Every structure is written in structure tokens, then in C-alpha cells.
Image 1 (tube, rainbow, N blue to C red):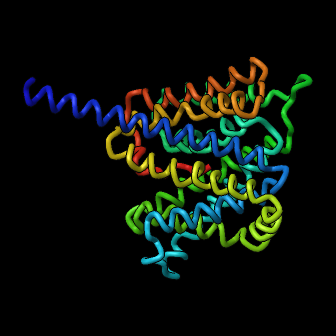
Image 2 (image 1 turned 90 degrees about the vertical axis):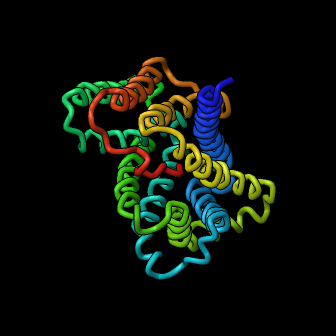
Amino acid sequence: MSISANTQTASLQVRIAALAQLIGGMVFLQFGSSTAKALFPIFGATGMVALRCGFAALILMSVFKTWHVLSWRLLRLAFPYGMAIATMNLCFYLALERIPLGITVTLEFTGPLFLAFLGSRRLSDIAWLAVTVLGLFLLLNPTGANAPNLLGLMFALGAAFSWALYLIFGKRLIGKIAPGHACALGQLCGGLVLFIPCFLPALIAGAGHPSSLFWAVVVAVCSSALPYALEMRAMQHLSARDLGLLCSLEPVCATLAGVLILHETLPLLRLCGIVLIAGASIGTVLTPGKKAPLAEVPEAPQ
């Protein structure tokens, strides 16, 4: 076998490994969200958010050794980013408490999608925007006996808005703080804000349920540490187009997780809405034209 063939084989293996890492990150993320919802009866949505942020901060700061660079200046830089993380996760879990996982993730996904439309000058994106609006109409249609909880929908849209802010504040940190330290400090800021009102009560509740407290740590690992580490490794070997295409499948992945793990079912029209929104995101990635490099946009730690 020639040197060129060996190089192509090695390159293909690296690409397949990167794809597996990115998909693995999505699977861990949705498993973490499903497990978190199962723990709501013990910790509540706000308590689960606080435990997730607190434990994730400890894990990420240990993995990236952020303790060595910790300073008030870095905390001030990361504070808006951390508040966006805390607000996004809080709205996400409060929505998850009331509506299915697939609907929650899909609505949250519209935040960065609409942000991409606002920054686009391509005529084709008008068509994809129309597809997104149609998908939202099918997803949010309040008629029928299976109408989703209105407050849950509002929280999910709040998570979408917070995700957009998360991307804006995250991009401002690029070049100022290393990506690993930025994520760790963001989780630390969010955890500190939630520490007294939410973390301590949840920790007290967990004292009587040590196994549930263990699963809360698992949620922090699956929802933050593992997805972030896997996505960081995948980004080194995948193009922006590949990353956008695969991340667009996250609402579908969340819907499958809701069905398989939480036994949630959705009417056909709402399933069609989820597919349309995911399809619009895929369309914006695949449509030819100049796009901002996706590798500069941080992933949302849901």
C-alpha cells in the first residue's frame, strides 16, 4: 500500500473518530437531561440546575486546572457568560419540568438558529426562516387535548433567548480566555449565583437520598464534562459544515431520548415541527455562501 493510501486511511479513521466523539457528546447530553428530569421529584428543577452547575464547575476546573489561573479579572470577564449559562440551564430545566424533552430542546435550539438568520445576508435563508416558522407553528399549536403547557413553552423560549446571549458573550471571550478555562469559569460563576438559594437546599435534600445525589453528579458529568471534552476533540478534525450539520440533529436526538428513556410521546404534527426546525438548521449549513466559522461558537452546555 502506498504512502498516499496510508495517509488517506489514517485521515478517514481520524474523521470517523471525530464524528463518533461528537455524536457521543450528543448522546451523553440527552442522557444527562433525561436523568435530570427523573430527579426532579427529589431536588426540583432549580435544585437540579444548581447541583449540575456546582458539580460541573468542580469537575471542569479540576480537568482544565483552572484553579491555577483563577483571578478576579477573569471572573469579571466570565461573569456575563456564566450568568447566561445559569439562566439558560434554569429556563431549560423549568421547561423540562412541564413539557417533553424533544419540544424543550427544539425550542431552545431556535435561539442560535434565529441569531444565525439575523447575521445572514443570503436570500436562501429567508426560505429556511419560513420553514422554521412553520415548524414552530406545528410545534406550538395550542389546539387539541395534547396542548403543551404554556408556562413550559415560555421557559423553553427563555432558554432559547439565553442560548443566544450565551453565544454572544462566549464569542467575546474568544482570545481573552482559553476555551477550557472559559467554560469552567462560566460554570463557576453560575454555580456561585445559585449556591445559597438553590444548591444548599438541594444538597440538604440529597443528604437523605445519597443515591440520588450520586446521579446528580452523573448528570453534571454527562451534561457538561463529557460533551464539552468530546466536542473540543471533535472540533480539531471536523469542518464548520460538518459540525453544523451534526449539531442540527440534536432536537431529533432529544426527541428519541425522551421516547426511549422518559417514555414521552408526541403527536405526529409536533414531530413534523421538530423535523422541520432541524431541517431548516441543516439547510442553513448546507446552502452555499459565506458563513461564520462554527468552531468559534461555543457549544451550549444544556
